[in-house]
Each structure stands twice: as structure tokens, then as C-alpha cells.
Image 1 (cartoon, rainbow, N blue to C red):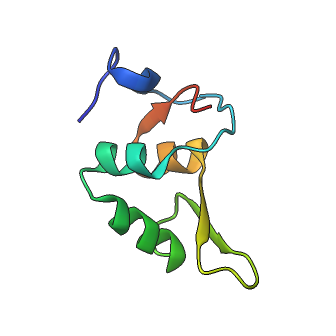
Image 2: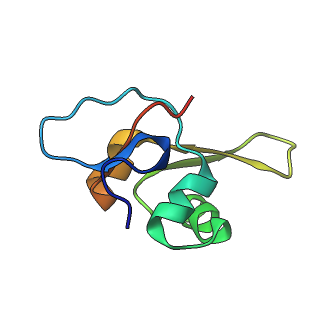
Amino acid sequence: MMSKGDEAGMYKSGENETFDGYNIPVALAAKIMGKDQQYIRQGLVQGILPIGTAFKREGSKHYDYYISPKLFYEFTGYKIDNCQ
């Protein structure tokens, strides 16, 4: 797993953290969790990964994904900074 000083500002953090609210990319979440991107997408669509949401617009075939930095931290213990 990643530790302080790794890419994308990732570090294992303590309590009382603040979060910027930006979206964590699916690819980055998958890398940290040791899963493939489809696992993350399907987990969000099915509501079994408590790290964000999947939204399908009316008439669209595709989903939009939002992975919350705060929920991701609560689930994995990893805080990711500056996912702009």
C-alpha cells in the first residue's frame, strides 16, 4: 500500500482530517485498493462500495462516478490530496 511521500499526495493519515471535496479518479482508487477499475465502477453502481456514487443521466448509456475523498479515507484509511 502507499504511504506518506507517494504519488498524488497520498498518505496514511490520522484523525481530525480535512478534505477538499474533489473527485478521486476511478483509476487512482483502483490502484490504491489493489483492484481493477471495473471493480470500482460496479461497486459504485451496485451501491456496495461506500466510497461515492454512480449516476446515469436519463437517455445515456454511460455512468458518471464520484468518489468522495472523505468516504474513501473512512473506508480505506488513505487520504488523497489535490485530486483536481
